[in-house]
Image 1: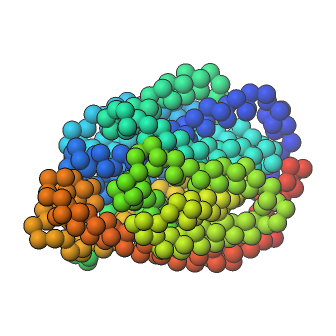
Image 2 (image 1 turned 90 degrees about the horizontal axis):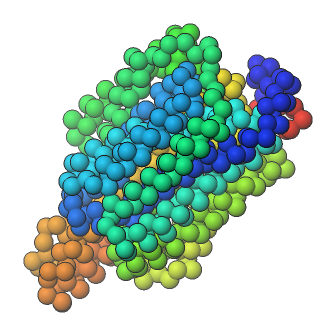
Image 3 (image 1 turned 180 degrees about the horizontal axis):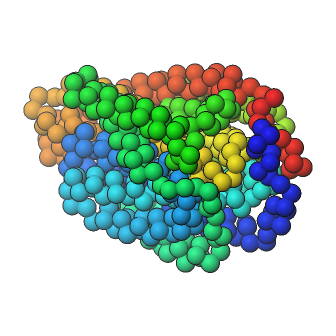
Length: 517
């Protein structure tokens, strides 16, 4: 840790370290994390039902899947900085209330366009939650070892949400209509707001200065413009209109960076990126999620529409990934102190990459041991990597900037998710659309696998079987190609993290430094 950072952790924090309510307060924060994680995972299970009911095109289906992440990515830095200024507790409670209300709008969407709009608005509310939770952890836990454990619990809860979401969502989808998977947010929201208003301490940056609205606009236009251009190019090939939007986005991001460097109280202190450990941790998060997310988005469809599993069974099939991530997250901090930050992060990333590589062997009839083993390895690797990088990012900044630093971490995560669904998802979609079905196959069958399954229901048995076999084979071909691309990304990221995180270490509880030697 640098001298400046060491001065931000004086010994008068001892009273705060021993505050008995801090672990109860953490339990409220992890509810918010659970909420966001559950919401992200249930959508994958509900996708076949949304396809059948709302009949979106293939492109609209991708937008339903990733517009939430696009908007979150655009607003995270702004919301993290806003929380630093007006109070992280206040922003968390406002965002949680809005998240609950907008979940109802998602549940009762009646057209693809309304569903996309509802997901976008939910993204605005979601952007207030994640940075606030991590920033409050940074201010609740001043002892480094306690903070590592708290971050591990935070990450483990997010991973548990990926297990709770499919299982709970699968149960609901078998007994109710698809909108019910969004309504499960409401009781969690109610507990979070009622209990959080009493237990959570308020924290803010007293010297934060005014909120930079011009910077907010530039970051929003820049992030959405760039991600939109990548998505459209990956889906449809090069075209000038998306390219122009991408160039506009890049120009806006450049202007945002230049503006932040001139402000006394910036939304985001760009000088943080001069620290190799901070930059390496952020890059590792972004590329890891990029390699994972597109694949995860289509895995639920594989389990249900290719292998014919019921929603609840498909949810249970994805549990090993969450269990592995929970176990790894709880011990990641101790492992990084015993070995090294770069060994734990790079090793975790390599494990995920090798697991994705094994999924290139998938066929429509692949047995569960290969899939379950790969998911377990993905969970363990991601749990080690994400927990340690979050600790590195938070420990590397003064606590007054915790919201903005947390937002950088979450922006990398959400941007990676959006790009992953756009790029890897478009690989799946592109390969799928190239399949050759039997004569007389409806055009809807080429839009999505869900469309093919629905179309087959109205065809003669022989034609339906031929159509489904061709469609499922093409979908799996796309899925294995995307898995291979994801594996390459993850293994390359493991190598980059090994060099960028060289010398990085976590703080010790005795007041020893962190940072890099």
